[in-house]
Length: 110
Image 1 (spheres, rainbow, N blue to C red):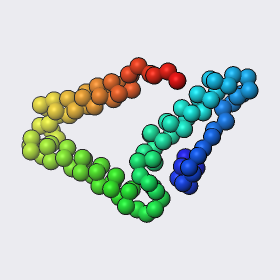
Image 2 (cartoon, helix red, strand yellow):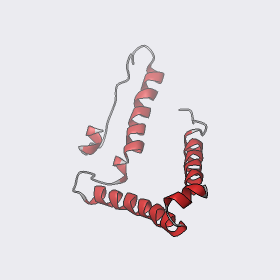
Image 3 (tube, rainbow, N blue to C red):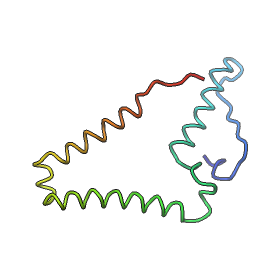
């Protein structure tokens, strides 16, 4: 991740025991890089360390999403009513369902 943040244009990661099983080790090294890039979101912007704009924009998005939930609960009459009507449980179940579907999809082979 440090190499990506530093602006590298090319990166090679050595896999453990690369000489003994090169294909599998290279695959692990490549997937490690891809996971870091995807999960960190660091490659979503040209220069993530250029200043606070990118981090602030992510914070603003998170705040807006949280406020939307709070406003919906307030429109229902508050947290107690939202729990009694099953809204909170429904939101948790939907989030769990979407997460499970996103993480349980068949994996593509290299």
